[in-house]
Length: 104
Ligand code: SF4
Ligand code: SF4
Image 1 (spheres, helix red, strand yellow):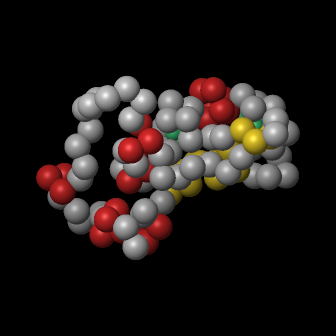
Image 2 (image 1 turned 90 degrees about the vertical axis):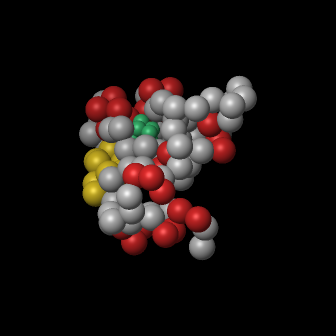
């Protein structure tokens, strides 16, 4: 269990991690933006054609590429913006609610 597991829908904003601060270059991996999200992208593997359009449009680099194929979405860093779902030309990504128990 990590520190984010305690967060749920009753957590006051004062207890959330701070945002909008850049202490050093390339530090985005240190901030689990997935902590904030209320919705998440879920890939329908049967529809996905691994065109990789979703990867560069993700503002959090949460969609990896491994051997020219889309990898598993990094939910610890996905903030649920839905851009990938909009960008996918094959309708393979659906945004679904995140249950409090799923919070990381
Ligand atoms: S854009 Fe859609 S079809 Fe292309 S890799 Fe991403 S999920 Fe798969
Ligand atoms: S919902 Fe947004 S942050 Fe999450 S994987 Fe898609 S584009 Fe990236």
